[in-house]
Each structure stands twice: as structure tokens, then as C-alpha cells.
Length: 551
Image (cartoon, rainbow, N blue to C red; front, side):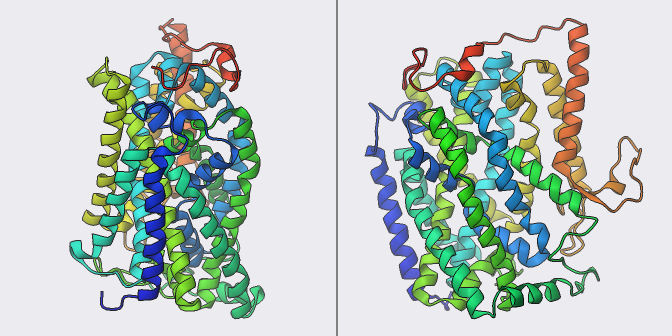
């Protein structure tokens, strides 16, 4: 760590200190009577307005990993990496109506998590437990990936040592994050998101105007990217990618974009931000305004092609001895901008790690507290005990994410997140579809979940990645020719690829439907629905709302 970039490091530290102060001050911002209740600590009092919710959702959905990983994927694979753009465009029309219904029923019934809703809708603690566990497991590597983005920035500034010393700045950052999240709850990331978004917009607007003019214009950038991506990889003997989709990856692109869109608001942290809003009108405004972030994401993605033209080489991770592809954008900024502006850009990415990490840890803690601790360990827990348990659980979740980064190859955490996306998609029938219909039997949903999770993991396990020598969990794209249904290969020989999560979801729905028909024929009890039809249309000023902070 002898090559520290001091000007960048100083600016990064000053801006980080600013958001730390904001994080601790947030405990007194729009505070209710107490923070010893999940409504207040975990959902910010359920009273965030349009602007706060917009920044909170943006900070929650567009993470540090987004800022470094999407351009890095475009840098290495080309057009396929742009799947994130249509995915974030179609997601908001898709989730608008379900998000409204989830807000209404949760506000009336006091639900804090999606598993709370499932428990009330089907009267099934088992199904609720499966949804809660899936949410926690899928969220943990997502938090770890925020550390991957933060470490990429620290590595570019010269903090690239091996062992525990190399991780020390990361540990300090997340200890600070843990303390102000413990104290302030969801209000902390909501307040910090203002700073993060302002910095991100400044950085990307400057970068997308200045860099192309410096490197010869967009025509030259696309030509250089096409030439580089078309060069055969020494390991595989095939081109690394292309700036246009091919016949074999078009289906993968479409199903990955759609599957990711369907999965995004199934993540507990996404729903946490929705439930924290004041009313349905706030959610409607946000679903209209949030595509503005998609514009920024598209501009960010193009930085992958800019990095190719600029001749950027990823830094070597001193801890693993391997090239860290996530350093592509930080190195680009470090090489092309002055130290002071690069410091601002690095702070934007670093703070962009803290906001979603805080929200994710709160969401995971809410799931643990409401759907595991209270359901199976302490049924008579008071609201104060629930809040204390959630605060402690949020610390454990953060420590677990840090341990993932320290103890394993960071690339494996990326693979874990890939698995997490496939897993969380399997909760769609029990969570999203149940907002509209109770036709599926609870045992059908359980059976579908088991099949979707099991087959999804089997397919992921069988996908290799020759480029990095991985035999298993090498990606999310499955060649149709390799798809096996009890030994039957319906698309034998086909090289067309498809997103594994999409295939697993179809299997999930088919099995859930079959078991539902059988269960209905056998007249198997389907639990008691605690919700009423009017619960799904309630708004903020209606009379049947449960008082906030009352259990």
C-alpha cells in the first residue's frame, strides 16, 4: 500500500465523514415517539414522501455494485451487459400495481415484511418461513457485493494489501455503518441517499460528456470496442463478446432482463422502501420518476466501451493475485480525470455502497425478527423486544457480509449473488401473485418453491465458465441443448441460451398449479386468509389504517 493516492483518499474520507455525521443525525430526523418499534426503526415511521422515497428507492436499487459491475460486464462481454437497461425500464410498469396492493394490505394489517403478508394470506407459517429464509439468503451476498464495489474503489486509491491489513479500511467503514444504522434505522440511508445521488449524477454527466470528447468520439469508441471484443480469448479460442447480440444469446438477454425485472421487487430491501412510503400516490409518482435512474444506468454501462478505448487494465487484487474486473471504472476515472474529481467519483461509488447495504441489512433483520424469532423462538415478544432483536440482527448481517469478503474469493460472492437472484425469483407465486389471487393452494406453493429452488440450483451447478476455469456455477446462461428433464433433452443440440431463473420459475408455477388442483380435489385445508378484499385498495387517509407504532 505504498502507492496511496493521497488527494483522492483525502476527498473520499471527507465526504465519507460527512455522510457518517448525517447517518447519526438521522435518528432525530422525522422521528416518531420512539425508535423501539419496527414501524419506526425498520420502516422510518411509514411516512416518507415522494422525494425521500425516490432517493431511498434509487439508493436501494442502484447500488455500488451496479456502478462498477455493469460497465465491467460491458467491458468484458459487450452488448449482453446492456441487459440491465431494458430490465430497469420494464420493471416499473410491471411492479406498479403489485407494489400499491402490497403497501395497502401491509399498512392495514401492520405487515413489515413480504413473509408477514404470506403468513396472513395463507395462514401458513411454513410457507412464510421459506419466503423469509429465501429473502435472507438472497440478500446476504447482495450486501457482500456492496463491499466488492467499495473495495474496488479503495484498491484503486492504493489500499490493496493482502491479509487483514488490506481489509482494515473496509472494516472501519462498515463498523461506522453498523453503528449509525443501529441507532437511526431506515432514516439513516434515506438521508444519506440525497448526498449519494447528487454525487452520482454530477460524476456521470461530466464523465459521459468529457470522456468521449477526449477519446475521439462515440464512433471511434464503438469501433475500438467491436475490434477488442472480437479478438479471440486465448483460453477459449472464441471472441470474448460483441457489441451486437448473437443468435445464441438473444433469448438469454430477453429472459435475463425479464427475470431480473420480476425479481427486483421480490427482494426484501426493495419492498422495505415501498412499505416505508406515506401512501399510494407516493408510490405512483416514484414508479413514473424512477426510470430517470435507467438513463443514468445506460450512460454508466457505456463507460465499459469507453474503458476499452482508453486501454484500461483491471488492477490485480493483492489478496488473491487475480485481476479484479470491478476496478475497470475506478481505474478509468483515476487515469482520465484530475485527482480531486476522481476523489469525488470514488466517494460517490463508496457512499453508493453504504445506502443499499444499510437498507438490505435492515430488511434481512426485519425478516429474521418477524418471521423466525417471533414465530418460532419468542411468540410473545413485545414491540420493544422486536426492535432490539432487529437492531442486533442487522449488526450480525453486516458482519457476515464482511466475513464473506475476507474469507473467500470476492468473485465467489458475485456467484452467490447470481444464485440469490434465481432463488428470490421463486418467491414470486407466493408473494406477487398472491396479491391478486388465492387460487394457488399453500401446499402447491410450497411444492413449487422446492422444485424451483432445487432445479434452479442443479442447473446453475452444471454451468461451467471456461474463461476462468470454473466447472460449476460459472454463469446464469444455460444452453437449451443442455437442459435435462429427468434425462430427457427436449432441445438436444441447441446452442441457444436461456436464463436459468426463468426456466426454474416456469417449473415452479407448473408444479404449484398441479399440486393445487390435486389438493383441491382432495379438499385439503388451505389455511385462513386474514386479509379482506378492501385491504388491497386502502390509502393513507382511510379510516381502517392501523396506527403506526402500535402492535
